[in-house]
Amino acid sequence: MSKSDASYDHAVDVVVVGSGGGLCGAVAAAASGLDTLVIEKQSMIGGSTAMSGGVLWLPDNPLMQADGVPDSLEDALAYFESVVGDVGPASSRERRLAYIVEGSNMVRFLQGLGLRFERCEGYSDYYAQVAGIRGGSARGRSIEPAVTDGRKLGPWLAKLMPGMTAALGIVVMTREASTLQLIKRRPKAMRTALRVGMRTAMGRLRRQTRLANGAALIAQALEAALAAGATVWTDTGLVDLIVEDGRVAGVVASRDGQTVRIRARRGVLLSSGGFARNAEMRRRYSKQPNEGSWTIANPGDTGEAIEAAQRVGAAVDFMDEALWIPASIQPGGRPSLHTGERSKPGSIIVDRAGRRYFNEAVSYMEAGRQMYAHNTAGESIPSWLVMDSRHRARYLFAFRPNTPEEWITSGYMKKADTVEELARACGIDPAGLAATVERFNGFAKQGTDPDFHRGEGAHERYQGDYGNQPNASLAPVEKAPFYAVELYPGDVGTSGGLLCDEFARVLDTNHDPIPGLYAAGNCSASVMGRTYLGAGASIGNSCVFSYIGMKHAAHVVSGDPVAR
Image (cartoon, rainbow, N blue to C red):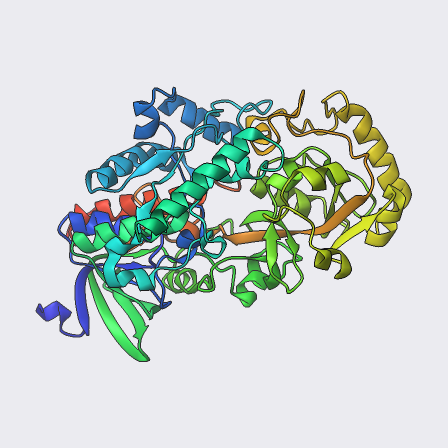
């Protein structure tokens, strides 16, 4: 330990705070020869990334290029400009360029270390083919990790956060989920279910621990980080940042009940998620109303990294935003997120007056933002997802093929023989709902929605029923009995945070870099601004800027002007 390290309990080149997408940064740092330490405050590794679908949205990525899927830097930038617009330095042209170019470089780098990915063919950009939007890809720019055997992790497998399909006991790819919702209706869905069943069964026969989705991404990244020489400490939480001579020089952490001072010679990367589980921060920053029971964010999403950076002068932006997804609250209190259900034919979303107020099939973050935008007098939180009996007979709801009796008896799902009776049961204006349904049905029979253009975008068709013609997302709400559930603006985490530049360096309130401090993921203000450009935009943001930040740290020293 050098003289400058003497006042510390432990000294490394870089400290990575958080074990989700930040692991991509840890891999980059360790592979560059830096002594790398990952600290994770929870006992399990992976955070929200492990619990997610594990998808990364990366324009013009190497898998697209290998498959001959057309894309370009120019198209990707045009898409950013059309959808995100000018929202300030968090989504500057320089950051957009860095994200697009280095995203592809990151994939090649990770592939070179043995990580495996697959394209999500057809999982279109969320605003592709929407009127007025340029540069979107209808075939999609998203990739996801290939299925991996968790046994490769050895004893680390026991520390891996369970993935989103772990409770289901099946090994299903994220890109297969939309098709599986049609299992009661379409042969393609049945073939997909057979493929999932065979994949799951073969893993068991071979005594493998097959992982998909976010768990597969974290498992592969963790294996690569450990192989490159990184060290991982669990049960080690960030307490504060240490500043010396105007530079972030390390962290104070709590490990096994002890306070530990850790020197970081080259830098600290904050990639520890947002503040979805911090009630006080949500009251201070988030859109209202907002209840803790509406989020499914990982329990460690409590905002310490953002607050620590603010104490050393960091600027923040988009703190009122989250990764919104309309959700119902199941009996027992757990949120159930709804994307496919509201995109399927035979359904509408209405406010308290019984009026439709947006295109129900838009992307989940856009849907949540619409719920808040319309809620000026409290009329759309909650809203109601109204369905007819054809919808309930044909499509899964909360991944259940049928309607459990408990849903009806508990009042979670309302059921009635007429639209007016359903409205009264829900506290909706009966005349308003009846008029809305009548108008909607008249157009839906023709496959059109002149009010909100539902089903015209590529993503809306992807989440709909491809066999329902002429519009995959539209059919009348006309066959009794009718059903409804309350919808709230749920989320999978907050998406505002620390303002960063194109090198992932955290900026102060004068927009100058804070030397030695980097940030990525949901603790940073997203390059996507207040939007979500496609499947995997959040994890892409986390992984790519973690990679960029640690590449920057690896190629500068404390005496260099760019480092300081």
